[in-house]
Image 1: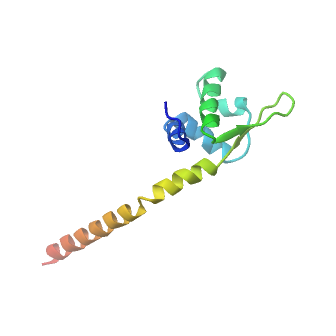
Image 2: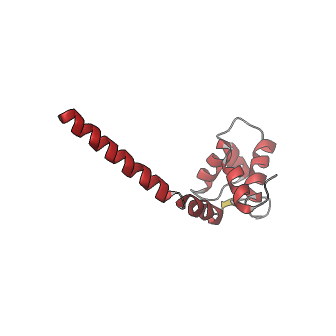
Image 3: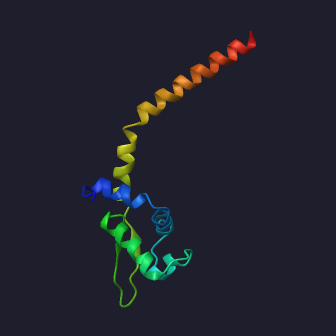
Length: 111
């Protein structure tokens, strides 16, 4: 089982249901019932997804009387972004090579 923080975040993001939950929480806090509404799954199944997100540090769960609002915690997403940023130089170089190839192909077709 992955235990380093970045691996936990990537594992949590690997599931489309959890990504949809995060997208909903980006709009503001929500209850488990509100989060489960768009999905054809049981409350306990949604709760399992929430536990994965919480373990990865992507959400926090408050407690106000019987209401347990879930909130997005974006800090781990910044870590994912920083990790992916390391590959920008590779992507930029790939696009530069593609642009050069397309330009070369265009010049050849104009001849």
